[in-house]
Image (tube, rainbow, N blue to C red; front, side, top):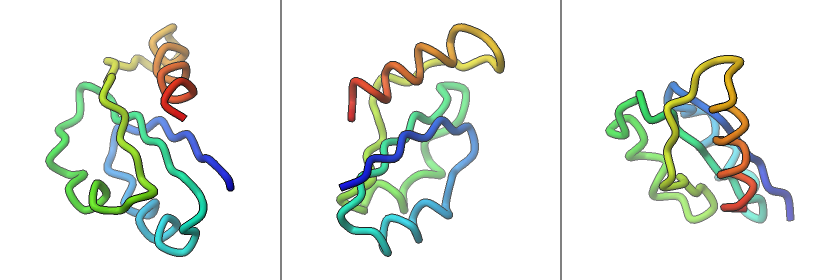
Length: 76
């Protein structure tokens, strides 16, 4: 089994295709707190895609990226 940890701020719809083709893999998404969740409806119906609840306001190059990554690792 593989686990993919993904930091994103735009809806990563391409992950849906990957999750459907790789059912034994788990996909963990941290979706930036500044982004609206409404765009992720299609992703949350897949059993191997996990949107982590602890959303952080991520700033490029800042410590918030590390915090978000640690949240992903903990979720996985």
